[in-house]
Length: 127
Image 1: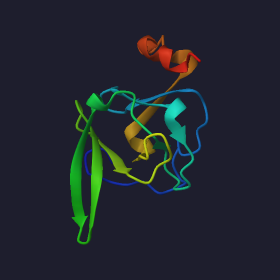
Image 2 (image 1 turned 90 degrees about the vertical axis):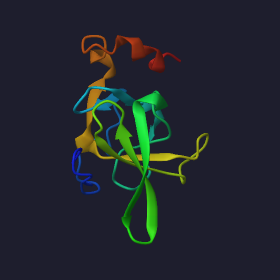
Image 3 (image 1 turned 180 degrees about the vertical axis):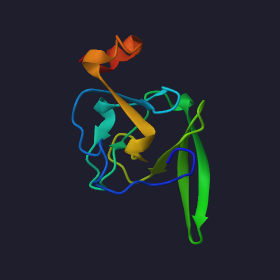
Image 4 (image 1 turned 180 degrees about the horizontal axis):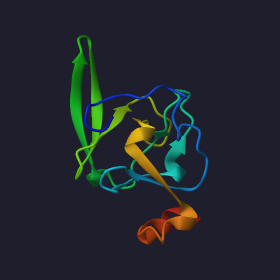
């Protein structure tokens, strides 16, 4: 999935309906990518986010695989993993929908973030 620009089946992946608090990291490199605070139900069957934790961990490319459609592919900076695509049809405040493949992500529950080495991102869950 991450190396061949694949797309998993909608509604048949582990994170599309995950509602637990935590962060999503690159399955290959562990780069912190998305927070559950920015996850929403887009109705697409894939995990969708309004923004990344830190946009500098993402690389965007024009995806012209389909003749009449140009999409924006999202890859991780260090592992160069294909994560999914970003669309401009998301909710406010960003108007963006980062539509990701669960297979490209690993979920780190909030209560395990410190132990897993992601304690610096616990600030995301302070109200």
